Each structure stands twice: as C-alpha cells, then as structure tokens.
Length: 131
Image 1 (cartoon, rainbow, N blue to C red):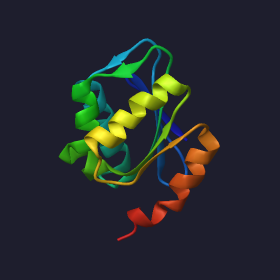
Image 2: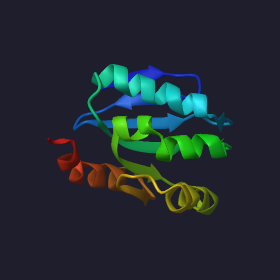
Image 3: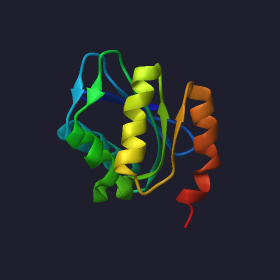
Image 4: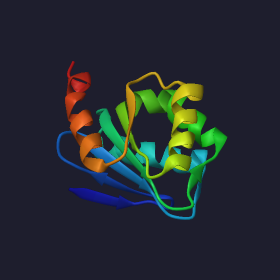
C-alpha cells in the first residue's frame, strides 16, 4: 500500500486497483480538495482508472460544488470506474443519498455500512477496468 497525505484527505492505494480516500475530520470538502484527490489518483496510477472507496471523518461534509464536481465532472469519469461510499450514521447516509440521487454519477456507485462490504463490492466491479 502507498499512502498520500493531502490537505483534506488521506489517499491510500490498495491492491486490486482500489483507492481509499478518507476525508479528514472537521473539514468542509471543497471542489479544490476533490480535484487534489483526482490529481493524486491520476499521477499515482499514471492515468489508469481506479475503483474508489470513500469514507468521511467526523464533522466533515462536502460543499454542493464539491459533490457535483465529484459526480459529474469529466475528471471524475476519467479517473474513477466505480465508487463505494462508507456511511457511518443516518445523517451521513442522507448526504450520500443526495450525492447519488441528485448528482447521478455516470458510473456504478453503492453505499455500505462497513469497509469489508465496500471492498467486496469494488472487487466485483473490477471488470469495468478491463478494456
């Protein structure tokens, strides 16, 4: 595993083409923070798409701009093949539902209550990376 510490997140490059981004506690995630994550993934994976697992720390949320950018920007589709969002409580699940239903990412996305379920699902999406 290779870990990069960014201002708003920790990006961990795992086996099976999985990247885990954890947005740090007490942060309002901006569009620039999401762009920094995409840039880190692109540089580390040399342009190859990844399967993304996302977790969010306590008292952390994404701005509406950041949510839209993460879901609908050309950068998101260029770098991410599928997303697994780990939800920690009901409030976080509501926010994740807004991301999925309102912004409608153009790739498979699921929510999970634990990391192992998210990893299992991402591994089942590996076919999306094969040309």
